Length: 382
Ligand SMILES: Cc1cc2nc3c(=O)[nH]c(=O)nc-3n(C[C@H](O)[C@H](O)[C@H](O)COP(=O)(O)OP(=O)(O)OC[C@H]3O[C@@H](n4cnc5c(N)ncnc54)[C@H](O)[C@@H]3O)c2cc1C
Image 1 (cartoon, rainbow, N blue to C red):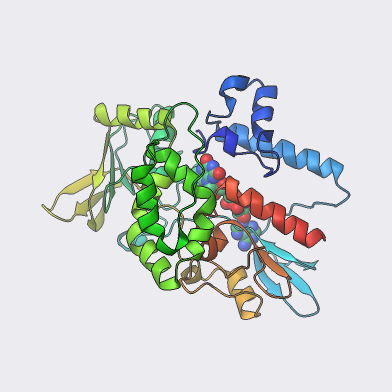
Image 2: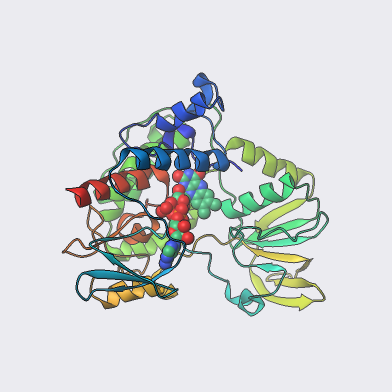
């Protein structure tokens, strides 16, 4: 499986943008000329991050202990104490919340199948698709990047059964363009965010992807120039369009998806589920309009990470909010953070990544997370 971001944008260090590219070349994974524009595999990226952690660990005087447990509570009495699900207590001067993307939430029509052996609520779990046989038919809820991941993974395991994927609009992610994209510095006017982006897209004369990527460094400022009411409108009405153009797949992935569609294996399109029944070992999925019924051996939930962090009532976040050390943002997309990532004025608790979505929007991928990590590490160590 490939990353969805070019290697040239995946360095762990904001001040050393070529760090990952050099690693790939040193490991002879890519030739020097191609490396920056290429899409590395997720496995290689994992090895890279492992190497980075190992080398930083050996250089640093700080001691890192990794504990396999779930942090459930922060007790603010006498400094901070993090309590885990096994009941262990860890004293801390600061807590940095880096919980990443939340598991996909379950569409209402599928809630009753929680625990069903052929309903996969989160395809990202290890071995979630291990039981799928070569000719099993599959119904996928969602047509975004997770659907793409799942289809590619199944095909890499020689799965040949029918795959039907449906979402409300039926949009598939767009593809990156082959080769090195034009570097394009743009600064849209914050007071007319969407009008100015559309104007730039029309007038730039560049491929639309370069225009979109050119806006990326300013996305946080643009987002913060919107009122909470406008952010809410964006999330409800424009997000599906934004996701399709902003979160793209490598061209090789798009080609593979096309092959799957042309061969008749994959049928991806729009449709609204009105009901799902368990029939024998599998399912029957009823779609609105025309009363089409699709039968499938498996139903996979590929609706993407849960956006509404507040409604998930995650114990560690609830405990921090109840202790007055953080607040949910008005849309419940994450926590309120300042520019540095503090959730409270005292600087005891910090948040990074998707938990900052309400305040930053563009906050779930490495190009943004590495900047946030650098800033938090610098602020905390000063
Ligand atoms: C399918 C997919 C593809 C992606 N592709 C790319 C890509 O190509 N390039 C890119 O830049 N980004 C990509 N992303 C975005 C990706 O989420 C981030 O790049 C990166 O994984 C975020 O790192 P993180 O450490 O913030 O979160 P994560 O990597 O999600 O790590 C969060 C960690 O916190 C742990 N955790 C959560 N809650 C608790 C708790 N209460 N107690 C203890 N531990 C807890 C989790 O188990 C996990 O280990 C992709 C995301 C998805 C879902």
